[in-house]
Structures are given as structure tokens and as C-alpha cells.
Image (cartoon, rainbow, N blue to C red):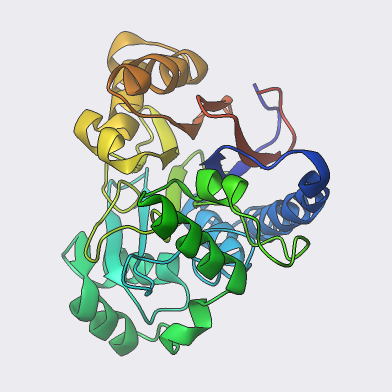
Length: 312
């Protein structure tokens, strides 16, 4: 349990992390996670809400080419980018998400605009982009999301005729510039603010070589993103189809709320038992109102961090 009045945690996706000589890049990814934590913590330290903190933290990771969200997102089978994001306020139960967008610089910001300025929960594709532009979101040319390492990752996936988790494709691919670092994954954040409110946000470019129009669990409330003050805030990463079928994020929350399980036990039950039994894998960060934090994954690794540092 944390003695701090607020807690923020972030993740950078789950999968098969690069090892050996390429592990030198891990420091850059840890630095990017630390920068996102500092940005979100500044919001909380200034009396800001958990919602604003997770948006700020995730947006910082979207701006980094090191992760599969925003700039640096993976490619679809058509050689394009389709981005998804969601945010949920544990105090009010309100949520917003967007899916399959191609021109919004920070998808998590657009998801927050849907939550705050519409009666809807999810908007997709051109309609989501029009709404985001009308409400002040920064729009970019689709070329903004391109990185060479991601394109080489797509080429390797095409050769294998496979659709891959970001980490897995990156671990097998061998980019020409082994130090450019653009190889890791889906991002998310959970936060507890000084008022005792929870929030969660998740953002992703999806799976490498995914078909056009495929939407994963990240923008689906209850699957990859969920928050309620009565239980926990959750941001998940992994094989989205399994997380959707299991409604995994809500399943974790339900175990806490209705069975009285701890955040750690609930996360382990879903991520380490139920998801693998259903043929999936991945991870999640889970935070309750007392500041108890769990970071659980069934893959080789998951980039993650918390501020203040807590025993997870």
C-alpha cells in the first residue's frame, strides 16, 4: 500500500522483449516511461484529477517513437496506420474512446474529448476525426506516424504471413538501425488522485500487419480499459481478441468488487489463468483506491513503471 496521496503507473506494452546486444535500447524506453510518469505526476501534484494525469502520461508516450501508439505505431496490412484509444473516469463512470483513426496526433486526447463533449462513448474512423478536429484536437498528415523500423517490422510480418503483437514482431525483426529503438508497444496509464478518484487510459496502433478496420481491446471499455472507484482502474495490453471475449479489464474489477479480492490477486487470476486458458497472453496494470498497485503479465516482458515507486 502506498502512503502517497496519489499514485500513477504506466505501461509500454507486453510481448517478447529484445534481449542480448539490442537490450541497450531498454534504457531509452525506461527514460521515456519515466518522462511520462513525471508529466502525469506534475498534474497530480498540482491538485489535478486522475483523468487528466492518465491523459497527460499516455499522450507523452504517444509522442515518443519508441512505443506502438501515436508516432511510431505499427502498420496495417495495407501499409497504413489505424489508431485506437480510450479513457475512463472512475469517479463518474464516464468514458470515451476512438478507433481506426488515421490523422489524430494524440488519440487519447480525442478519446477524452468524446467523453467530455458528447453523449457517446465510442466514435470511429472519419467520424471520430471530424469530431476531434471540431473540438480542437491536433490533426496531422498520416505520414507523421511513419517510422522506418516499424515498416521493416511490417515487411518481416508479411514474409511470415503473420499478424503479430508489437513486441513479438520487433523481437524477430532486425531493423537496419539497431539503435533507433522504435520497437515496443501499446501504452496505458492508471492513476489515483488526492481526492481518492481513479482513472485509466490506453492507446495503441494495434497489431503489426492487422487487416484494415480491425479494432482491438484498447478502446473497448471493459476489455482493455476500465475504471471505477468501487473497485480498480485497469489498462491492459496483449492479444485483443481474447481480452474482448473475456471482458478482461472488467473481469478484474468484478473480482475485486464482488469477491473482495485484492488488485494483485484479481489481476493474476485474469492475466495468468483466464487469458491463457482462452488462448491469449498479455498484461495489465491495476490500481485500487488505497494505492495498491499490481503489474502482471504472462508474456516474456512488459515495460512498466510507477510513481511513487511501490512494491508490485
